[in-house]
Amino acid sequence: MARKYRQLMPDQRNQIQRGLNQGMSIRGIARQLGRSPSTISREIQRGRVEETYDAVCAREEAQRRRRKGVRKLTEGSPLT
Image (cartoon, helix red, strand yellow):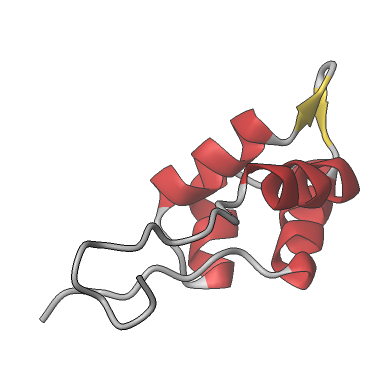
C-alpha cells in the first residue's frame, strides 16, 4: 500500500528550527518528528535564509509553491 503524502505542519517546522538551534542532527530531528531524514534535509535546504533555517519563511515559501491550479476539463465531462 502506498504512503499518502503529508506536508509538514507549522509546529513541525518550528521543531526543526528549535532542533537546529540546539545543535541536533538531522537524523535526531527526523526521529523526533517521525519523518524521514531526507524530508528534514530537503525542508532545511528549502527554508534556508542566508545561513540559518527560518520556520516562518519556510512556511510562506511552502504556501507559495503549493499547486492551486484549476483542474482542466476533459472532453465529455459533465461540465464541458
